[in-house]
Image (cartoon, rainbow, N blue to C red; front, side, top):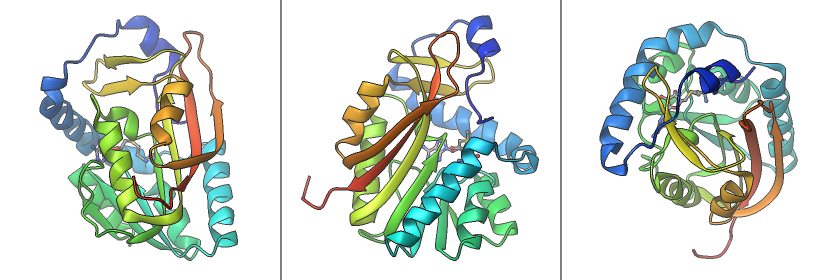
Length: 225
Ligand SMILES: C[S@@+](CC[C@H](N)C(=O)[O-])C[C@H]1O[C@@H](n2cnc3c(N)ncnc32)[C@H](O)[C@@H]1O
């Protein structure tokens, strides 16, 4: 199963609002958590749903003649390995230093950086892939991250995004210190429209409290924002 808010954690621990002024604390807490758990994450197998989605993404990329793929929130390089092995030019970016180290040990190209300030020039990539990462961005940072994706992925390129969401918008902090901003399907689709056309959208892994995984395929807009 994908990393995310399991049923137990949502019912056991009350959620709370996370003020935007604490966004630097959010980043620091996330980096600390992911630096510490990255090697363990590397040893965890990908779930069937994720493997199927990566496989379908790569097939779609091939059909479209896509050659270069950026992964935002590359983590331990589990998806990145499949993308690189699929014959694509792969570059991963992650806020966690340890994630970058683990990816490089796997032979992947990876850089430390934030989704909201991608260290790449405009139109550098044909496609981007980002799973279980962008729901960690507080306040309006998702909009900044999507603007960055639109900048570094060429017009007409492809972006696939997966995040943990909910039936209603909410922000909360897990007991392990990680911040989550969950969006409703409509809210997420509204944000994604600023990146381009949402050509496919799916949800799965529904929990009793309304939490679920959201996945979207977006064709990057060809007109200026
Ligand atoms: C739940 S993990 C997912 C990793 C990988 N995509 C996977 O599915 O296994 C979230 C990842 O997002 C990274 N991350 C969190 N906030 C980030 C940000 N603002 N910019 C870039 N990466 C970020 C974390 O360091 C972590 O590697």
